[in-house]
Amino acid sequence: MAEVFSPKRITIRDCNLGKKQLEDIAREHKQAKVLRFAGIITDAKEEPGKDNNEGYYVLTGDFVAVNLVTGDTYAARKAILPNVAANPILDVLSEGKKVKAVSIRVAVDIAVCEFAPRNPDGLKYKFVASALIKPTKRSVLQDVLDSIELPMPKLLGAVSEEPVSEGKGKKK
Image (cartoon, rainbow, N blue to C red; front, side, top):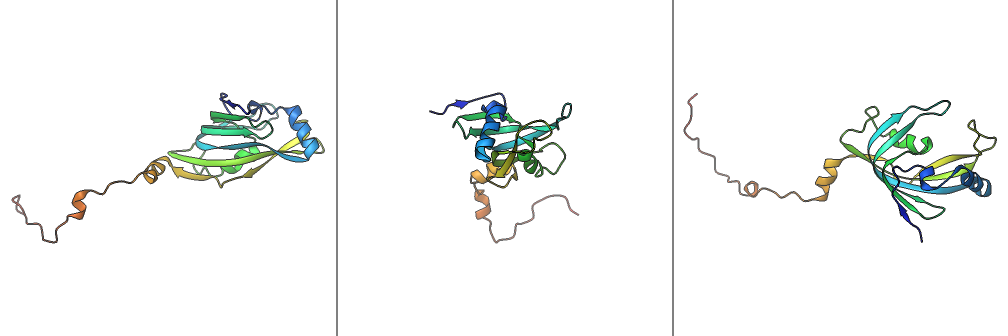
């Protein structure tokens, strides 16, 4: 039976998908889905790359991922996705590197495919991502308001057609 894990963050490696396993999957299947990722992003922070590696984004929010090889499920409040999966999500951000008072809903499948010749970092595979839903930006407050029915004040329905008489007050 598949287990549910709570790592510090969700990454390909933290979801129990190592380089050797990914190379074997890519070689055997040419292209195969290995991870389904879904969540709500409330913040995104860019981290610079080291040496020849490109930078990446640390996503904050509520996330769940399913390792499609083992069936194991992972839940965390932080995630780091391959750039091929993260870039379309980050395109939804309109104000720099921070998400302000909004949440971004996302669901994506990440596949591994054979890469020949070897890519520059020596791996024999690359990642391909396909969105399951279009990343959408939405106010967190609007989500709350849409989930409840706000009562109408009783006075609004009882407005009289009669003019309101002027009370005592200062003269003009």
